Image (tube, rainbow, N blue to C red; front, side, top):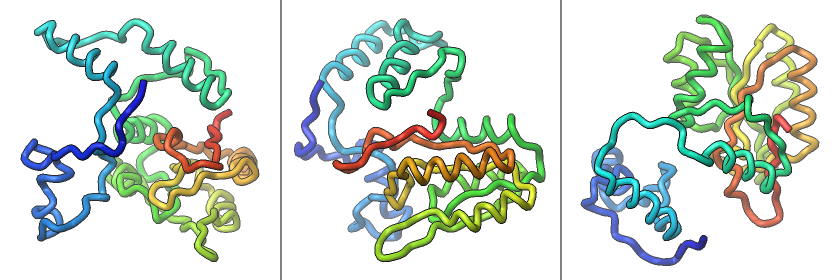
Length: 218
């Protein structure tokens, strides 16, 4: 499969939230809409054909898991990250944010404190607050143009009794791809203080050359 990343595609007046809501959101229309995870290149031809084939069936009722879906996910994780995932570990979610909310509600109680690391993806804030949990911030440290985790801050929070953290890897929006050493240090702290770490790794396939994403759970 291949994509054309340099082809210009006009998306205005196509009911695109990214392009058609600019003035409503920012008060002017000459803004580059870099605020939303929405790509301006076409997917591979095979993807378009598969979606078109399904649409021409004409019936759009509730669906069950498609054949080969789970196998494709497990194969991708193994080939891309050398991560062998048990089939029983995989639970389908309709999106990242609903998945975060499901986990927060399943693994914590109302009033529990949850740690995040700003600057970070805004829904991390709303998922915590809108589900009746207390938000605790452990800001990243910016030094010489590079962000890093404040492990001393994390340990203070963990040792105070906090049992849940929402982690972003690679980090959105600062772009950090965490190293093995950093991930191991975070994991050691989590184990030491019995903290559950919910890792949002949606950007794992989009990292700059010279960097390698490592799944926290591996």
